[in-house]
Picture (cartoon, rainbow, N blue to C red):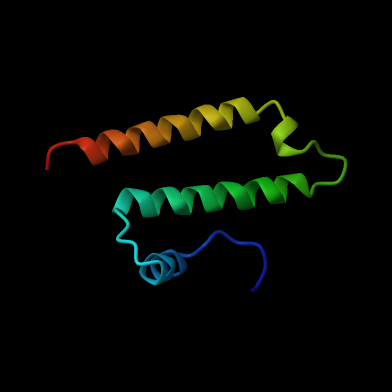
Length: 81
């Protein structure tokens, strides 16, 4: 309500509880990361005379970074305890 900001950990926890989900820690981290990326993209897209984030040259790099982060989280989730 106070402006554009990533979802807080409290909001993610409340969503999880309200939806009857028992999110794994890595799932909650991914939701937070996706929310932060969305907000960053919206802010970038507001720049006057700027290029929308989906058309900027850095988009491919951001996709690679996100894919690497997701793969790393998946490896952690699958690692023996």
